[in-house]
Length: 155
Image (tube, rainbow, N blue to C red; front, side, top):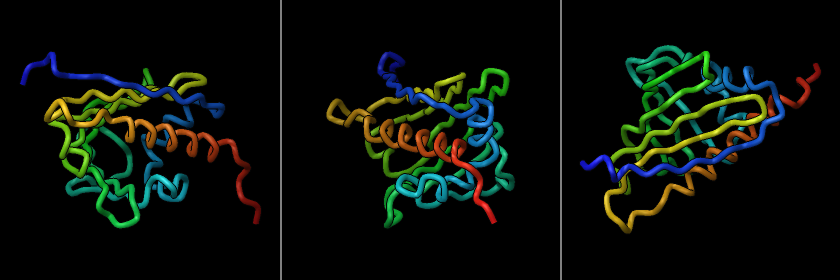
């Protein structure tokens, strides 16, 4: 595979919540994604041998993002940099891999911004750009931001 084939796209989502809390949600709170972003994430589960929801290098998760379970991906955390508030996932399998030889997504959170950068290699020139997935990530970021800004439920 020629490295020149690697393409990059990104989406930046303005966030108003605390960027450290936002980042830590993706490191430790991702099991809440179906509740926080129900339009986008239908189900998330750990994949053996992963036993903890804390994201660290080697963590495996399976995410279902449609009602019927046909749209899903399994990813592995390949880089976690707490100081830079940055985590990179490599997609190992899933429906999106019909179009790509490889697909990586990096979340980088700074004060005021959550940025996803995807690196991908298309299987053919006619394979679509991953705009659908970037839109999905942007929408999830907006939901997570709203979640952190909303007052806690009262009893």
